[in-house]
Length: 115
Picture 1: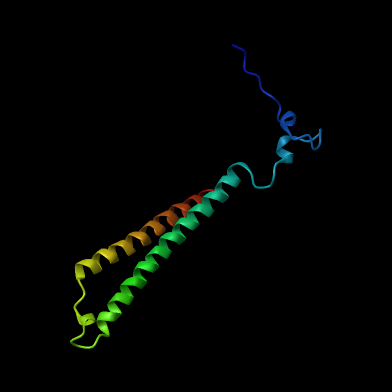
Picture 2: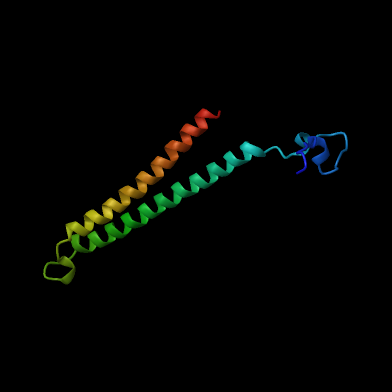
């Protein structure tokens, strides 16, 4: 087996300037900074999608309930809501909100820790 050898960072650079080091040639957002930027992006998008899903479910529930609430007596739409179904939808809405809140709280803690 051959012995491991280390290569100075300036040798790995992309030959833009022979006197500069790799660290000088890296973009401003690189390494852990770049990774944290992507973490913020992905977590924010996940939270946004979870809240969007909650909003959609809540909108569907509201639309369904309004048909019952504003129906004329004797019409099919005047049937009472199935509260078990309502509870299932509300639980889903709250789970989506909880998911978004948990991820955002963790992201906030991470952001404050790495300021």
